[in-house]
Amino acid sequence: MSEAPDPEVVELATKIFDLARRGETEALVAYVDAGVPANLINDRGDSLVMLAAYHGHAEAVRALLERGAEADHVNDRGQTPLAGAVFKGEEAVIQVLLEGGADVLAGTPSAVDTARMFGRTQLLELFGAH
Image 1 (cartoon, one colour):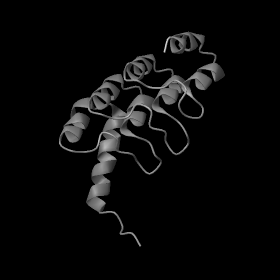
Image 2: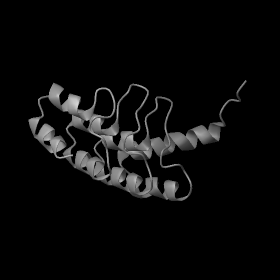
Image 3: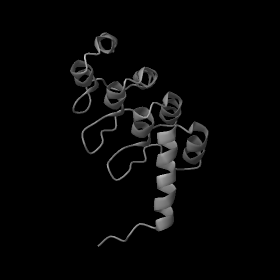
Image 4: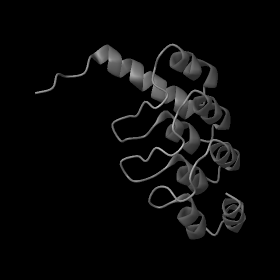
């Protein structure tokens, strides 16, 4: 039987996930630099990179990747940060993820499949170069 999580730990994790969602890069990386895992995930499997990417925060994504976060972490729904950024049309985030080594074919649907679904031919051309 597992113990219930410490409420203070849950509160801190919630705060850190909110920093990623809001793109508060300086505060977010201060926590990561102090020891919070760059690959921290929430109860839905969303990583800090996923939350920052989905909400359009390219600098936060870049800072997390520079600190060892995984570009292709797949959440509980099979989604990657890159596919989420394609869905949202976040071109700056897409570029940062590609520079960080994101795989255009990872996840379900993949970033390529997502670009096809939404008719984003310019992204398909970009992905062809990767």
